[in-house]
Length: 215
Image (cartoon, rainbow, N blue to C red):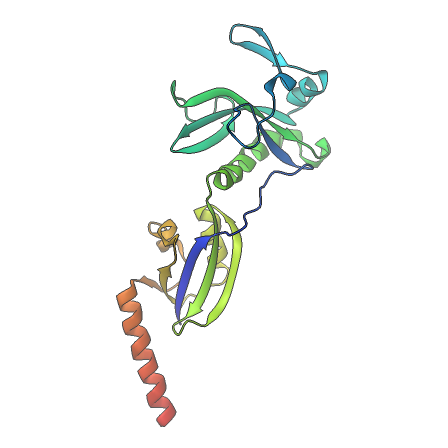
């Protein structure tokens, strides 16, 4: 089946931060999640610090809180402190803290750091505006399906693959079609074609339908 896949920015993306889950606190005052770093860190010497409260010390020790680094060069990227891109000009080594507000027992201790990393992957997509929506139309512009809330290109591809069929022939459209320019081979469809070829096939299909209706 011929299908037009329209990729657009999600009109109302939802922050992955939750009071009962992970949330990012920024020590960089120009960012929206900023809070006074004095509430979280106590400077003990040049380049040295410790958690400002006993409660935070326990969270850090129990891995329900993590210090964060922040890299920005065009786009921003949060990471567990010391794990992300390292640049003397573009990286803030101690840029914030990641807090987990749920019950500690909800995440196995050995998995907490990995869960924090996975959360930051999603948060970085949201932070940089990489949250997408898609609409699928038939060759005549009739809407077949649509959905939103996809964080990043991989999530978008997975969502489309839930609805595309192996024999579908697809053309990519929309403001954010470029997101799939290099990943369209990951779509579970027969073929991805350009606009010209899509219209040629659509016209041929219409002619076939018209002939069959006369017969």
